[in-house]
Length: 293
Image (cartoon, rainbow, N blue to C red; front, side, top):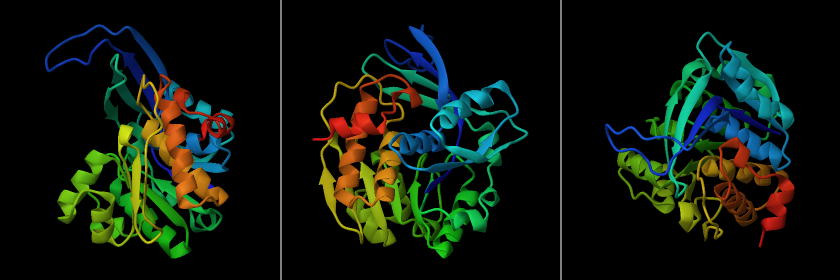
């Protein structure tokens, strides 16, 4: 069983010929609205790859709540841990250009009301892996990391966005997952090199650094490896990182070793990059297995 403590959003995705510069107004070729949020994306990616998943977070009491929750329900994710708060459902405005590059602006909304207390100790003891990100309050993330450590639950912390978290909290994560920008930011806090090896040495924990088109690298007590990305014609990189993390968690939960889990996650992320959308781009277990080398 995997639990995910994280954000749930309604994404407003604008397809553009090119991204606007400062002060510029551009016309979108298309707008579509779908579910998103790093937490929900990762939870759904894991569920689509066959894992049993529970989502813990917050939405508003508004029509966008159903947008955020509907794909999770359809995939069989347990949403009993999602509460309806007083703030509106979180949203993201995502701008995607013709080359698949994106810019994203989020409004946290109800995500700022998510509490570690929504996952009580009894529930915590029933899970094997806990996924967390940084689109919910950092203090709640740190609290849940400490409680999970005490309960013997494996934790995957995606430091995204790279909001400051005390080094003591970072050390509690069994695997710290960062992209290149997030790794450089964390390295600045810690005064170390910004690769997986440097971050792992500074923290004493496992670090997985995703490298976009260059693949991913891992360093820490569990081992060291680097895998290339799968060659794809990228049309939209939105949610590809979340896809990687969710599938990585699902593979670990099934008992795959580190290299096999990273290979599967890299394959899934490549498939997501070849499709438009956020959650609509996430592949299922059959598609991932068929694409494995």
